[in-house]
Image 1 (tube, one colour):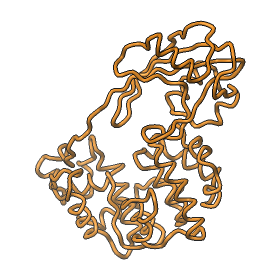
Image 2 (cartoon, rainbow, N blue to C red):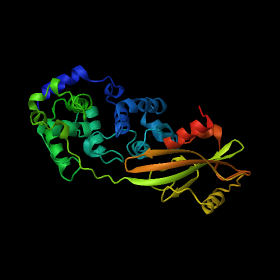
Image 3 (cartoon, one colour):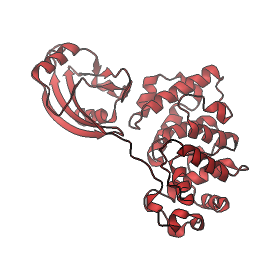
Image 4 (cartoon, helix red, strand yellow):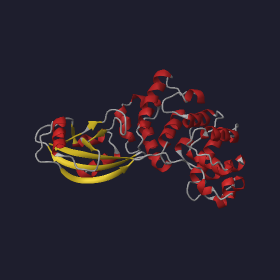
Length: 344
């Protein structure tokens, strides 16, 4: 691969992004965690909100998990936020607030994998270690005509070796950012700009007509269907919110009272009675169905029904409607409450 042409392309086409104007490991780390599984256009406002609220690792470590999750709300993959908070406290408590300066030390931190460790090490400390994200996989697979599925055992080592061989050891930070930006803007998953590509002479995929076929990724996802019934229980300006415990989706976020069914059948009278008992609800009338939606996650499709009811007496876990914004919620529940309760 012609690295010089790649770097020339980057100098002319790179986006003006705030985390590129700094070598502060905190800001680079924050941006990389946010941009995992998130497009720049969606992640940028969250980066700006986090920097405004937590300008350094000390302020992030001092925040509560609920505050961090609340700020993260809507970005998805909430384990990233929990790991972010955990690592901030780890760095403050065990590293005197100073990020490790090598790839080998960085990768030991929770939530920091191979890619993020390489990004921080090369961007901030100029360590010659290649990054490997989805954009890089795509560029390398096309340039070198690699049809080994990128999500199989052994493929990472193949791509990592090629990425490392192409790395410019004198300017690893620029090279790593260049190849990622090239994948994000030019060598895109759909309709890449092959006709004006500076690397067209090197690209085996283009020469063999395999551009749209590479990279290869095996489908391993088994989509699980879940049927959830959420209840908006109102009592004198309060509603019920409870914290989700245990592992699984939306860990430590707040939700409305829930009945989960094995199929799309409505809850039975006995299930309503169990709900009343669990949350100390004294219903004025039976629950009324008011809305439904389908919320698609990576591994799960959630078929959600929303119900409304009022309680004559104070239920368990009452939250003032005016305080709902203080609680981190799954975006599908937050949107429902905003629409139903006219929360601004």
